Image 1 (tube, one colour):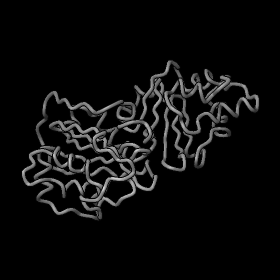
Image 2 (tube, rainbow, N blue to C red):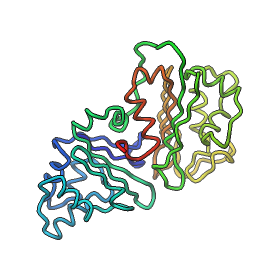
Image 3 (tube, helix red, strand yellow):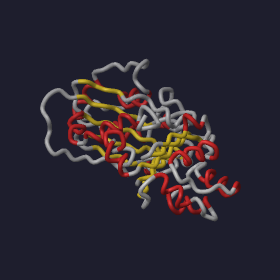
Image 4 (cartoon, rainbow, N blue to C red):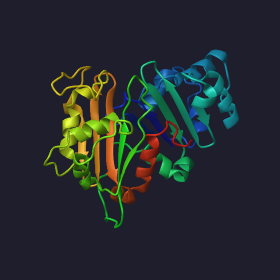
Length: 301
């Protein structure tokens, strides 16, 4: 079983992925039900302080509640005792093979997930990116012929709405190597282009043969301080909020480019992905699940 914490406090890719020995979600909760210090047990077991998760264990101890014996009993315990910032019937989603929870800590939105092996096997097109740790693979076995599309995915946010990312943007008829020339020749549409894409286009140099130099320039653009407006910021303005571009992770392969941009000392990183259908054909499950990840917090919804 895998646990995933979608949180901007969790490193360059804003998520933590941890393998667990339990065979089911129910088994995980039963294992920790009688722990004397739920917070410490969860921190040791999951590798992070998962916001609010300890409350169901703490309240069970306070009220002397027996460990749940069925998934329905667990559902009732979670509904009554798990703390989330929002309606529990919408933000706590449990089935036989997974638990998906949304909350926030008054600073940013957060989500965490438990997926057993059956869920992982049944939904690779939804879960491959969610459960992938680290940078995406850049390798391509063979390039497919035919028409292609390049996608821009920005896992970015403003005003704490960290699960409300701009929708993926598509450039039909292009591979990623063709994107710089296309951007140079295209006027941006401020009504449909996300701010990140508008800035990326403006920072493509006249001789750039790949998208990597423009991404390098974006990494030092002060408009991506979380307290700034990307479209009204000048290049000479200072970086604020403890932003350190040298901590960012940039990798540009022929058909996929990825930037984990360090934006804040406290809130960490935001992720940019540019990939085309050549890469997607080689990694269909990662591509599909990444596009889904940008459009909603629950990958199984």
